[in-house]
Image 1: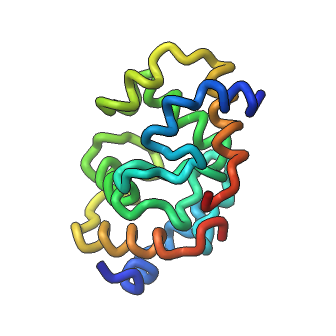
Image 2: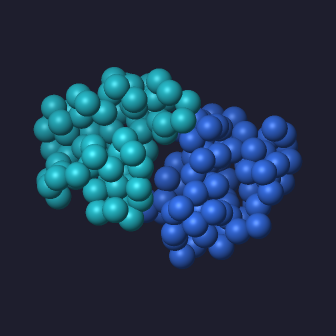
Image 3: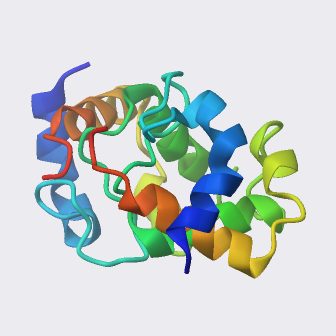
Length: 82
Length: 82
């Protein structure tokens, strides 16, 4: 996976999850330093409809396998705690 | 919420999420230092069937509102990164 490509893709995510992966809004999870495999499964759950969320579902729609891997690698690479 | 009561309730959670809230198994999320409100909504999603998971659904079944608040407070209180 390519965390740099993930960073480029993650611009829109920062609005809720924070530019350092610590979310600005208490309802949304911190992502910095989270487990890569968990992040991948969560993104796919939103993409594939296993998880339904008014904001995350549209965000995840259309992401390719590479996008998912890169986004997960990027957020997992951020220093835990921001 | 009562993080101490949450700790007492969280014994079974440690098996996957780690005694310090850093999960042992890459597929499962780290919980230490996560946002309280997000943790509450995730636990409730499993309890109320919004999220379906072979392991988490039975774990969350039957938790009271107080249990949910205490568990969320406990894990949120753990030092991020373990």
